[in-house]
Length: 174
Image (cartoon, rainbow, N blue to C red; front, top):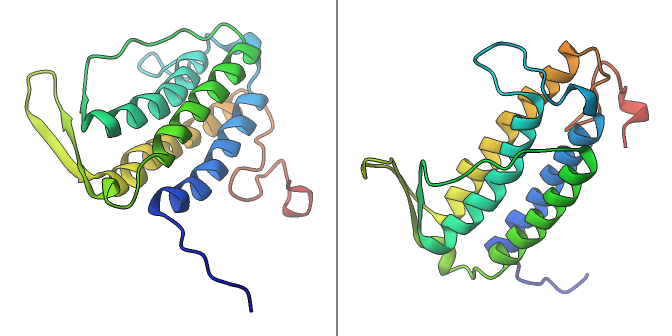
């Protein structure tokens, strides 16, 4: 039997989060660059805007952990010009977020993070550990699902995400 090694809450989360990041990269890689401006409905984000938002979420949320608050309406959206630019930016943001998260010991993972509307009203208050799973991971998974629907509507094969798709059977996955 091997020696059991204690794993921090941050390392546990990062083990899951890195899998989620791989899903994001597979989605980004499947999107047709010539369709960055496409949107399924006038109220929907464009392909490029949705991709940028997914990248921004990781940056915003990991910064909010340090600042102990996320303030809506104080974040600018960065435009996406190309797939290569998007992938480079995503890798840079992910590396920075992983560094921020890894710096949180189990005690810091219990600190609260507040979500604050532009008018100052607090709408949510969670410990960092819960915030990472609920707000960061849940929010990104939601948008990954949207991107997979965008792919289907654009008649682009949907890659393996968390399991096989109609285009990538289980045997061919990964």
